[in-house]
Length: 258
Image (cartoon, rainbow, N blue to C red; front, side):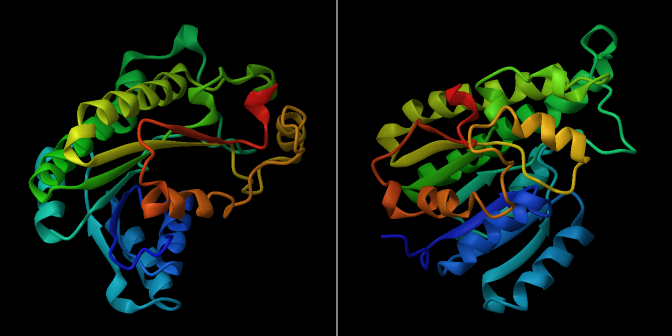
């Protein structure tokens, strides 16, 4: 049921932390992956690393700009066997000692708003549109959107102290969940499934004081590990979720249960 040998999965933003984890999960269950990213050098680095541990012919890298329809079409032409799309690309400010979020609503510029929305929301729209057209021709397809627990609840701005999580992050993630439900019902009679995964924050050596403030909001008392979402990705890509569409899987250590 969870065998992915007949699945070819394109992952947007595939060179990022979660993109690599999604790829590992798919490869571990026999699937093929295309690491699609606007940073081709980084995408190829990730692909090269994955090839060391998995079948070389199952790992590919490609340049793809999710905000450019021509670029998306070129990726589809290059890999016509793609039957699963993971919309993973996003712009998410890091929390670190050296980089500030700069997300105060009262001073957020329209330029910053458009930059975030273009990548996270418009990119999702353009990729979904192009791949749904392909999947209709193929007779089947599967889209997995990556949202966030902050697409379900508002960010607790207290954990960021003097900074703020920008409204663009919430706006785009809430929108992605809505787009998932829209497309799931729109294409339900075309054998195209569309689901969403909403992860919580992944621990990547963030400042200790930030981690403590965040984990106090999580019933399980910890941030996610980098591989905590691999099982969900396999499930969503596989026939194990064949009767599931329009759903939002929230995997957040219980945060949204409070």
